[in-house]
Amino acid sequence: MSGGEQQMLAIARALMGEPELLMLDEPSLGLAPLLVKEVFKVIREIHQRGKTILLVEQSANLALKVSERGFILETGKVALSGKTSELRSQEQVRKIYLGEE
Image (cartoon, rainbow, N blue to C red; front, side, top):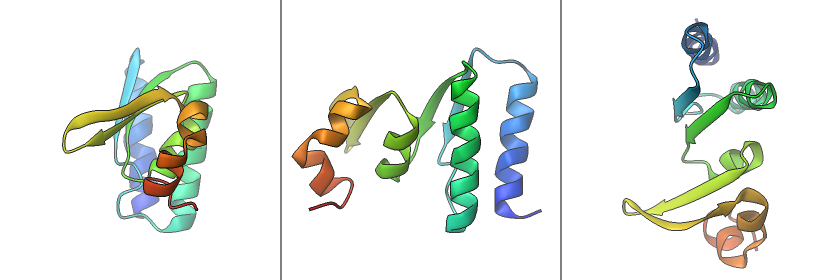
């Protein structure tokens, strides 16, 4: 199985237990960009169906696109938090974490 297929299988196995909270740690790690896109599409669909998801992800841009609330950590401490729409509009977040100018 490819890395993307393995991630999808891991998510499906977790959902079989009908958890109240789905915790995902770095679902994009080691995946090709096309597979990352597919995995995050599935994560978005799971959330849209009403499942609560705790997502830990190095790619702040991806994480903020599929979430409602965000917590940005620096050296293990919460540096910023809030609604993702608010975080994405902050100049500091755009420059430092999203690589935008």
